Amino acid sequence: MEEENKKEGFIGQVVNLMDRFAGDKVIFLIALFLMLISVISLFSSTPRLAHDLGTDRMSIMLDQIKVVAIGFVIILALYIVGKPQWYRKISMLGFGVSFFLLLIVALNLNLGFVRAGTMNGARRLLIVAGQKIHIFEFVKLFMVMYLGWALDTFKRGEFKWVPRLADRFPRLSWLNKDIWQKIIYIYFPLLSTVFLVMMGSNSSALFIGLILILMVLVGGIDWRDIAWVVLAGAVGIGLMFGAYKAGWLEGSRIGTAISRILQDDDATMQQLLSSKKGSKAWQEAKDELDQPVGALLAIKEGGILGKGIGNSTQKYQVPVIFSDYMFSFIVEETGLWGALILILLYFSLLARGTLIAKMCDNYYDKMIVAGLIILVTGQAFMHMAVNVHLPFVPQTGQTLPLVSHGANSFLVFAMVFGILLSISRDARENMEKKEAEADANPIIEHDDNWTQDTTV
Image (tube, rainbow, N blue to C red; front, side, top):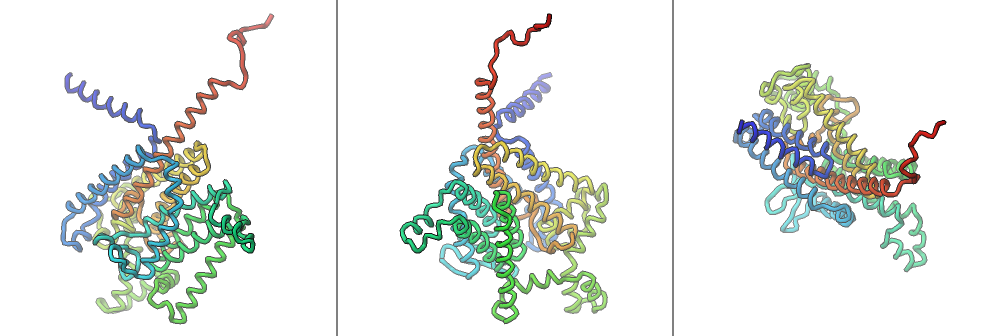
């Protein structure tokens, strides 16, 4: 009886704790479920990584548990301490910080305390005090926050520096027009960020560009403006392609992008079958097919019920199944049910984010929630699309948010969930205040006897 009372007491404390949680409970639980899936999946999916690193899977799992613990602390800290007004002040620095960091990477600069680094021959790292930072992961968050501020400030008509410049110099009065303020504060930051990211990762540039364009569309900017932005981006890509063909950008990632766009899996398979095993042509074809074909095979072998936890075979074949192809791995071990659970979690996040955005009482909060939800769910579904080899989707990876291996990505998405919970708490409090005011000041006043039957 005493043990039962203790159990009930513990459950009661958990229930009371959740009752006192003022943020959105669904989003909080989604984050917890994804973190749990991450720890289990990382232990089972990393034998090849353990071999490459000269360690064991238990060590990798313990490292992931540490990352999860840090991420959980970040979520709680931002939820408890964070305030939307603070986020708004920080957000205005998002583009400036992103531009500075991306320039260091693109120009391969060494500033002493921070310098550019490479990964797989591509410029996409910052090295700070010996620690490698995947800067594109942070740029996603910084630019979503910045666009939230820029769209809100444009709507309020509160841009300062450009209007002051126009007032001081009459010849620049045209800068006061709305279109020029949108170009300077919204479109130029968007396009310049995408082009700088493209120098190191085409897939990240494509994804960041799509996320930011969607956010601008949700923000109510005229779709014709977006069409001009897309046209400008296409012209820029065309010029870069011409420069590559002219031999000016031989060290860039443009060649990689072209090869992936034109990649023909059937032709690559034919090259593999017709080449002598172990030859250079055979190895090149095998390397190109290992990931996409292995991922599809994992999904096919998973079937409806899956092979069971720990029974994956493709984790020994697909080089980065623990990161870029985590969805395929989960489907192989848990089957269709595992896929449906993941899809349900991310769709639930999308639905709750939409609800929270509607509850927010100011435009900035709405835009930040919308942008962050688009970022998380957009990356999740792009990851899945790559894993199932969806047509017209470049076969290059984005991690599965809060699940895949990668400390930088995990911590960035922990910040995303912390900000969402912080804003959801304020949104809920605002709704409760409005409901209380509505109850205290009803639109139609009546006496206590108005419901009495007055029929004869």
